Structures are given as C-alpha cells and as structure tokens.
Length: 409
Image (cartoon, rainbow, N blue to C red):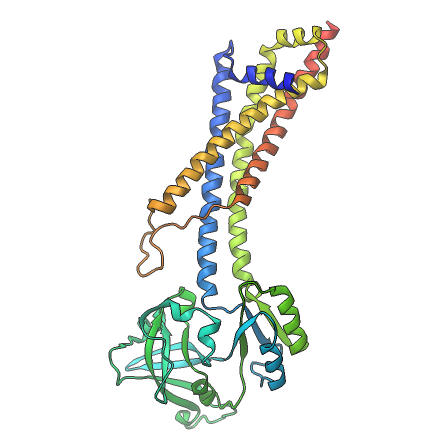
C-alpha cells in the first residue's frame, strides 16, 4: 500500500507535461471543496431552524399527551390519575379543556381556541417563559384572568393597561336547538387579559389560556377534560413511560409523545433538509466528471510510467490502486478544504450573526440560526468519497488495462 500511495502522491503534486491536466485537477478539487462547504452550510442552517422550531413548539406542547380515541372529552378516573402520579419519571401532569370560541373585545371579534388549564400547567409546559407583556396570571382573588397569544391580542386590539375592559367569550350551549333566540343559544362569560405570550405564529394567532373552571362553565362540563398533559423528568425513559401510560389508560386512549403530537411538522422539516441534500448530491455527482477527465488524461500521459512499473513487476490491481488513491487524495483535499470553509462560515454566523433575517419584527431571532452536527460531517465525507470512487473507477480500471497492453507489446 505504501508504494502505491507514494506513486499516487507524486502523480498528484508533480507538474504534468500537459497544463490542461493541472487545470482540470485543480477545478475538480475546487468544485468538491465548494460543494462540500455548501453541504455543510445548508445542512447546518436546516439544523438551526429545526432546533429553533422544535424548541418553540416544545415550550407549548408537553412531553406526553393523553386524549380519548372516540369523542372530544372524557372524565378522568381518579384511580388512573393516582397511578399516573406514582409512575417513576413523571414530574407533573395537568388537566386541560380545549375548545374553539368566539371572542369579542370592544367592537372587535375573533375566532380563537380557549384552553382551560389547572394550576399544574406551568410545571408541564414553558408558556410562562415566553411572555412578552404582562404576567402569567390566571386567577387572582377569585377573579378569572386570561393569557393570550400575541396574534389574538393584535386582532382584538387588546389593551392590557385597561383593567376594566374584558374579553367576552361565546360558546354554543350543549344540546341547544334555539334558532328564534340566538342570544339564548350561547353561553357567554367575560374574562380579563393579564398577559401576552409570543411563541410561534401558529400558537400566537390561535390560543387564549384560561382557568379550567372558566372553560368548563362555558361548556357545561363538570369534571370532563379534553386532554391530560404530562411533564417527564430529564433522565426519564420516554418509550417505557409511554408504554406504562398506555397500559394504565387502556385501549380507548391515545398516548402521544412530542414527535407524535407534531408528526407532520417533523416529517416536513426532515423532507426539506434531505431534499436540499439530494440537490447538492447531484451537483457533486456532475462535478465528479471532472475527475474522470483529469484521470483519463493522466493515464494517457503516464504510459511510459506504466511500462516502467510493468518491468518492476507491477500487477493490474496495483496500477488501478495507484490511480484510485490519487482520486481519493483529491477528494480528501477538496472535502477537507470544504469542511474548513463551511465550518468557518457557520462559526462566524453563530458568533457574529453576519446574515440577518429580514422583516422579523418581534420574532425570537434576528439572524439565520446555525447548528453544526457531527453526523452531517460524516455523511458528507462518505458521500464525497463514494461519488469520487465511482467516478474514478473507470479511468483507474483503464490504467490497469493499459498495463496489459504494454505487456502484450
């Protein structure tokens, strides 16, 4: 191997008699380096956005959620709740009632989703950490209060400083068939907003958090809930706990982890990332044809060298290996340069925020997020090596066959 490596290294760095070979070889290495850097930057940006979106969604969605398979609401069994509370790895759980409602504030009306939560809700999610105005206050001295999304606030024109103006909430009465008196077909209650959260547009435009008793009274519920949300410990075995929860609740319930609660979102983000990777893969594949050209011309130039190797007892496999090793060196030089360039740009973006997001408004970040992962670097390296090996195989094989022609001569 050392002999073949030394010959391949000499062929790589030595000046060729035909300057075009040097140019094509340089272009090949440059193309591999640029595309490798593009892969590193592209995948890192997608990782950054994925990490950001997931962290935002995780501040609203719980680690685990229990819902009923048939119907909208259910009455939780006291014994089952006690069993859930005693499970190792469960930090807290919250009872939730969720329903769409018509909101009215002054002259403005807006359709939103009210989410009634119990006092344990703050331990289950991180919504209270995403407040941009006011306080996370749902009950104060027996008076119900609401925490609303920034989008709901904007559409209703809510003024948190006006303590005397409340949000009127309208919900159809259960089983009501009144059509002559529409005003009697709805339950109506007033609640006073105390805080505004900003997480992500999907939540900000949709949700208003209220005490669970407030939501139940509008829906004529007594002990019913629409979901049980759970917070797991940092070192908890999520798969094991999910199986235990399913066993406790029985076949009539769904027990979903974070991925299953947002399965479509996760799939879309993964598809976008790998679609970008495939596009760059095909560009790299096309660029690898430069290697075919440079090696083919090098094989023609090195006919005399091949003849000398023949007199020294070189085999067809050895000659093929020499040119494959040269291609591998070109790939490693290009890939290494691309890694350094791509990682340098990503590091500069992380620390200096060179490229800003335009029109972010009140968004949580001001620059493109970047997150480098070791797996991506390994995948890119293997991809480049595979493509270069495939591209170099044919001219290297022809070089080995050239040895046969020399012997026959």
